Length: 330
Image 1 (tube, one colour):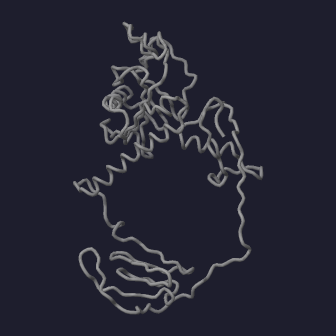
Image 2: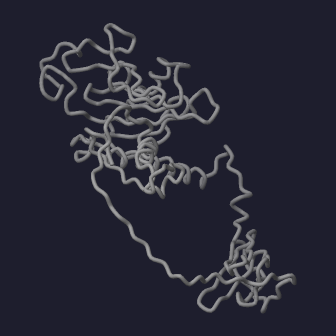
């Protein structure tokens, strides 16, 4: 399903959104589409017809025979088959060895232990524990990861982990932008950039996109923070392309989204994407006239404009000139 006039079709299944129930035996696919679109783009288009591109039918088969073995409860303490030295981080440690067939439901094993099955061997490391479920599965609780807290102290490993995670977010932003774009400049030429910014508007991480975009995006975010101050709310998305607001040339439109924690009034960080548009209304095709003497001759100018306000896409908003949005009469 997709909105009329858009190129991004979303596969909607009732299994993904079981909360949408209706009187129809097939479910409410419209609400499923709106939920998926809201999750994908952050807003929905009101009063826009929804088109069904194609229909796919999925069939499943299952056996009528139920196989769900139940183990008897183990009230006694499990006895190891033997004890062997096993090398872990820090050196050798005496490690109990158990046969999986001798373990019963509810048995708790504190690491380090070795559990041997007919076709596999399970290692339970130190500071971890294993519990046998009623169905014979081995459930391992990772203790060391739960007990280690993330602090602000410099840690090379934590720094590397979070650096890669933040960069991965920016890279995923770029993949989603490319997948959902209609413009050839973005979908095929890849003339766009994505980045994350901290609560002060400073650059945190960026994907390896276009350097000329990324160099000034921090200034764009910080300009919008000063322009809107306390007038930013969850569901708002900002648009800007003016050189005085950190833009490059007018066809490079920057979209900025502030991200909030629940019950927080100030954004905790920002995400931004800058993409090149083929034409935004200049005096020549492409909006980059070489003989222009005024920025208004290059096309529409936006200093600070709410592209999405409270989750509502401002598709048909009426702008009067002159206004504080910073849009030129062109």
